[in-house]
Image 1 (tube, rainbow, N blue to C red):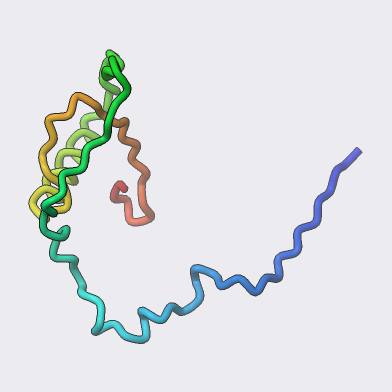
Image 2 (image 1 turned 180 degrees about the horizontal axis):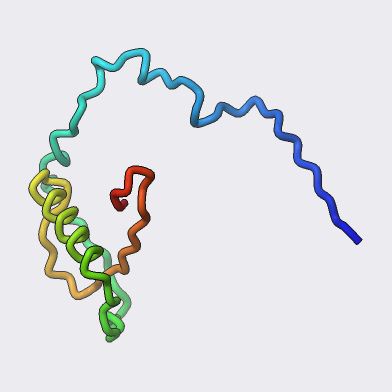
Length: 105
């Protein structure tokens, strides 16, 4: 036997491909963002539960090309002021996806 489903593809919801208002006024938006806003006087801290510690786990292995790309992207973000160095013992896995032009995101 076969199972068929029908989906209504007509919709009044705007598509991401529809012309956006930002394209009508390109002079209003900068080509490059100057960086993140200045540091606020308020310090932000995430309170951890008593006894919470990073999970001891070996770092993820990366291909040499991915490691180079990660270092390059982090250095660029650091130079542009979007990120700052961290001494936190907590980390996060990184996943790269190739874009249509061959570069990685």
